[in-house]
Image (cartoon, rainbow, N blue to C red; front, side, top):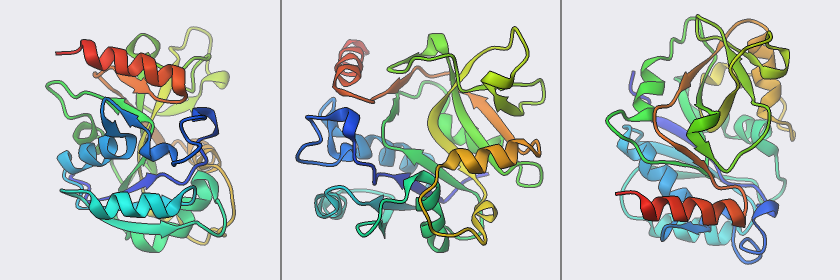
Length: 240
């Protein structure tokens, strides 16, 4: 499967990234000389995405100006949340008419990795089955990431289905969400446009066994605050 449409979540306030977000949205904070959103849009373009819906709220005018001036694909379509910040779930519901009826990528702007022999987004899409899945999440192991701590987000069973790590049996391997997923827009139907987290959608789908995961081979870097940005830039500068 080649996924042609993506939603890029770029409307957040970026409070943990202050003071770098005192005069810009988090999506325009630079890492390795490139804005975070450009890292993600380039990944999507390389995976065959032709249209990217980008939601805007914080410093929305600056975001739109940057995206208008951006060279290369994918085509950018703005989902305007200037009037109300809708969180991840509400932002998806508002953008649903722009997403179409086929599976889409949904990507955060603070996820960064360098592909090796495998294109991680292409592999994520290739493992998605619309008949049995509503979501397929990109995941990392604890030893394969920087910039995130905690007990873990999910555990995976032998069929690749996910459950919350807190509910997993003893001995389960903790896996961390890498900020990219495949979503089927049918899960957004008849939803009210109101602020809520995508976690609600995941929990509903996990209860039906319709969420799976793909553990990435690449090293995942989560750019969440100024200190992790520094760590990520150090790691990038040491890579060939």
